[in-house]
Amino acid sequence: AEAGTLIASLAASSEDIIWKNVMISHDSRYLRSWFWGLVYLVVGLCWGVLLSFLSTVGAASGEVLVKWGVDPHGFLFLLFMRYLPVTLQLGILALVPILIQFTGTQFEGLQSNSALQSVIFSRYFLFQLMNIFVTIGSVSVFTFFDQYSASDIPSLLVETFPQVGAYFIEFILIKTMFGLA
Image: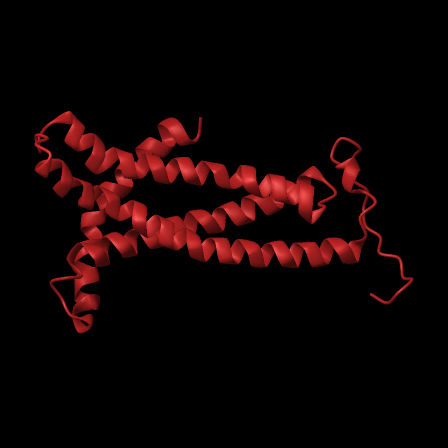
């Protein structure tokens, strides 16, 4: 739009308006939106590293627990191997919408709750997709990475993707029972 032109749209209901952001100009909101989009892109890349670390915590903690004398068939072993990594991932994933809402209202200057919800849903969806793809890839690749060369990775992924299915069943159950509450 050229300087001095009016940008009009349908008015939101008064309950939907975030009144403290009404005076922020369209251009300012546009620049802020781009900036925070780039920030979330960088956070998403770091998110992949964090998820890779959390998804390998279970396997690494198993060896340590056996060295400490924990029974490999006991409840404590099962807790650390299966439920702790998934619970940590879901706990961190549950913080994402709160952070997006905070940055949307405080820094991006979104002017309506419906626009804020749209931003929250779209960015949170991308974080969940990243969560799924990074977890599948990291568990499948890092599980047998020492035993194979780079040329064996495609066949390795085909063999190990089904083994990650149990992890995602646990992930869905824990998310359903605790994450959505």
